[in-house]
Image (cartoon, rainbow, N blue to C red; front, top):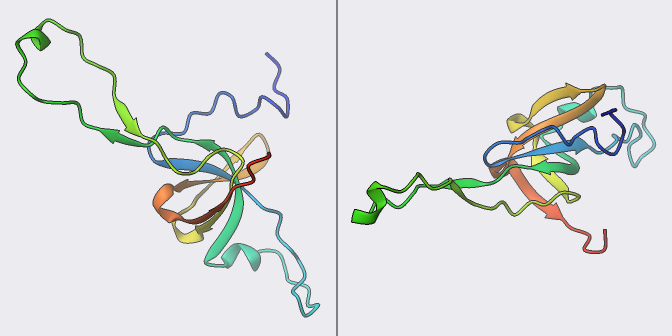
Amino acid sequence: MRISEENKLEKIIIVGDRVLIKPKTARDQTKSGLYLPPGVQAKEKVQEGYIMKVGPGYPIPADFGYDEESWGQEEEEVRYIPLQAKEGDLAIYLQRDAIEINYLGEKYFIVPQSAVLMLVREEDL
């Protein structure tokens, strides 16, 4: 299978309550017209980017109640409380909690959902 722009993230699995964010392109000019050197935007406390992949959520412990029938059964799969974030959402997040990774020449951040401050969702996307 060849890696293309459409399928390059298929093999990535995000674990737990984390999301994979592609940072929004930084503006290199301020509202007043000043040009910012590279890296100034990256040092801001709050960043924004698009959610590319979402983890399964918060794991729920299996029911530990006593049941005679449960001795012979196989372990049930882990269940999760899903995250609010969805692929395609614009996320405003805290930079200090983000972990930067480079994958196939692209810059991404892995961010726990607790560091996401706000989501902007376009329903028609």
